[in-house]
Length: 253
Image (cartoon, rainbow, N blue to C red; front, side, top):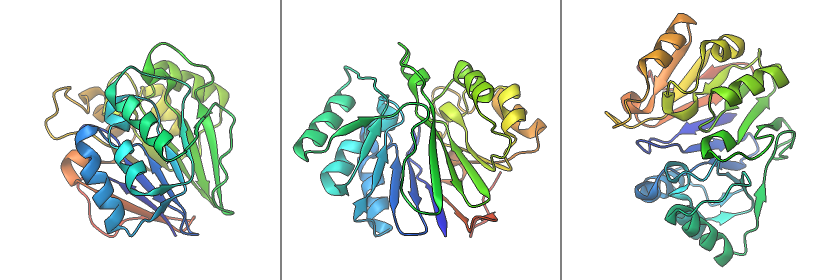
């Protein structure tokens, strides 16, 4: 069984993916104030080794808690875009990697990440590095048997145009909505093309940015996409046997 754990880190992103062969992938780690939330969640899930950390881009609301993760768990591999930052979050992450002799590896479009014999992970973006951090977000497609899961970091409209022109994304079933539901992502064209059955938004309760923006919510509704949010539901877990995607709780849309 594949498990997708959406960890409620407030205004940020953190996702734990547990594969059928008990491999662990952590995608982002929330902000500096999320370190305890993320590490305690991983311990509650009895995670001891993280086979793969994917830091989608160096914004602090995505990498702020990752230094604590690296300090407290065995991490086998860590991946990021080739995009540095002057922030304390980035410096803390690099120091934590250095202290554990963990080599940071950079991802680009076309890379495959081997993790599990039944799972394919293909990196769709970035194809090159730009000045704006969000535009460098790692976007990847995880395919488990007949189900396709798309994780988008904070990618923006220009990334989405590139994605739908370069890849056939019509079979996506599960979409992590980009940039906390901001209007700068999730264009009608992209959502219509990807047309997932299920979408999730990670955002803080009554956050200062007004995420998710109404235009994003409207686009998802107009396309009849079931949408769940961390600011409404808190932590969420989705399960897949490769044929269906289910939950064990009834989340509010």
